[in-house]
Length: 288
Image 1 (tube, rainbow, N blue to C red):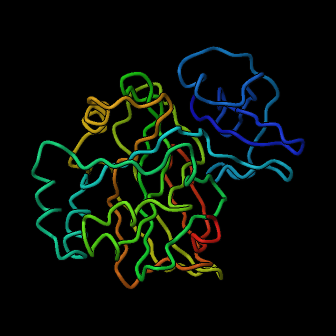
Image 2 (tube, one colour):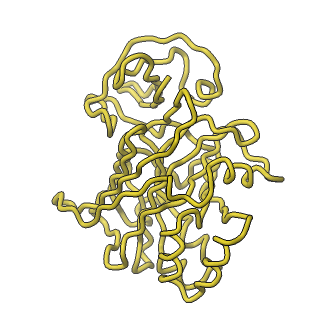
């Protein structure tokens, strides 16, 4: 098993597909609509095969709509995990000492982004930006799909859409800067490697409705200051999380202040092993 996807067919039936033997070829898992049992190691019969039109965005043929690969009961986020993130938050906030200090502490920054998928969307869906903010930014991240006691079942792409202006005004505004309609996207697949990966490259591109690239940058998880296992161990410490919870692990890409997400923009986040998460931008009030 390499990648797992979910989609809905023209009759409204939800399907789960697993990339089994050939890259880009997904076999339907019979009798399954939720990917979590598959990720937990249960065995199922495989049915017919489908091949996405695009191996990275995993766009499917007409009539089939790609869904989030998993519907996490909770989405948590870790902050202050990259050196680039520290400098960017210090530059954007008058409370720079707060952000500087957490990088030196043993305990990481963790916060609840969503529950019951009320604010989380999938590939091809619209992400939201706050209409009361002058600086909205995507935050491309590796998402960890978690099982018992925080065991990592797989990896996906996440976008922790944020208002950097509101967060910079006061650390007490963090929840308003981070939690609102359409503020989180995950997908397009869950990557399940045979062995623990050594790291991931993350590429993000922001473009306008005409296809002109407004911003592009690349980072790697090798630049993280904390490991995935360290973050998950803190998340489950005295904190019961439901199976299938996703932990977004922080961003190493921060667009400058003159790059502000606006309606009509597109955000693409590419991780070679997982695929490309593509979302367009609307004002959050349209999704609420």
